[in-house]
Amino acid sequence: MKKAASRTGNGGAKSSEEDHNSKLQKLFTDELKDIYWAEKALVKAIPKMIKKASSEELIQALESHLAETEEHVNRVEEVFAELGLEPRTKKCEAMEGLIAEAESVMKDAEDGVMLDAGIIASAQKVEHYEIASYGTLRTFAQTLGLKGAVELLEQTLTEEKAADEKLTEVAESSINMQAANEE
Ligand code: ZN
Ligand code: FE
Ligand code: FE
Image 1 (tube, rainbow, N blue to C red):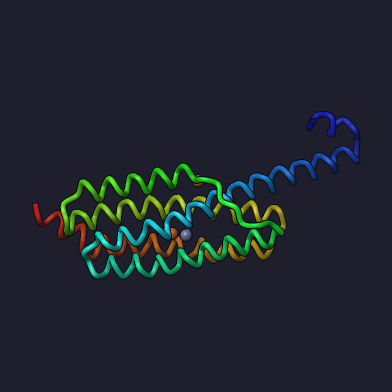
Image 2: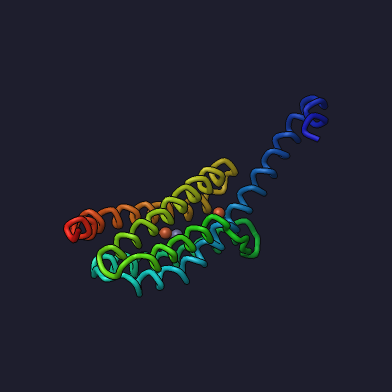
């Protein structure tokens, strides 16, 4: 189909570009459904991490990111609206796996600093997945000329990066040190 379009001269070149654009739009929409599922899953998963955490600093970091995550769900809905679409989820296998791993880490770790260190490790893997997803989504939106979407995605991307940095700080400031000292 692509080949046929490129053989038809100028008009063909244009329709091939349109074809490319609509394929990118489809990929963008699929990725958006994926992160929508992931963010919703996190709204349920983060409270379980908060319950298991002991460090006040970690609990605070998770609570503030839970509030942000609820906002991320809203922002994804706004991006769907920009596209003139109803928000739809598509199961994110990666996030399902990351959450399952977090649960098993929490089950296996001893309470206290070790458990906190495990929660941080799991949470940072989640943030990195989100950073990759929002980075891609923003770039797709840029390519598609969706200015409003770019702004929304950029905002969330910034918060995911900040959450990741905050977790690094928490880990460095207390938990990992204590965990090492406990041996
Ligand atoms: Zn998020
Ligand atoms: Fe995914
Ligand atoms: Fe996040």
